[in-house]
Image: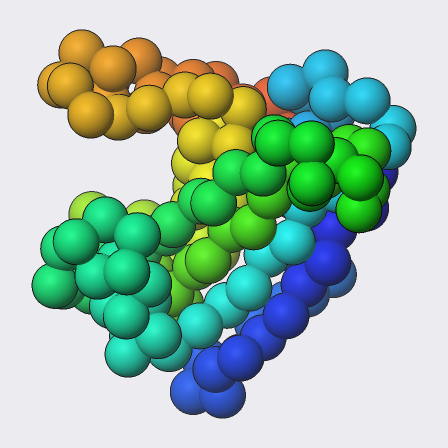
Length: 151
């Protein structure tokens, strides 16, 4: 499994080693094959808002956007290429305070959330959203228990 991490924002320091570990462990819990490739980009509020407008026609900042590539062109680049995840660390910081989470836990949930979207989960309806949130918590629990990590 390969995780490509890009940090295109400079305001919030990120632990790329931990991000890679969380991503790889989540993919293992999700039983993904060894040739799986995911790109994770950490972007500014401005960039995630622009992406939200472009892909979802919503003119607002969001926390995470997943862009799946399961077509033949993407697969010709890399057989196991799932897609790209865009994460806004600023939104993670704000939401961590709002929901009483640590920044690390909030960021971990965004990574898992993005991976679930790439694997076909959606959160359009309220029931699908609840199901997805339960799955996120389940995966995070397994990752933390397995590695004795604190999120």
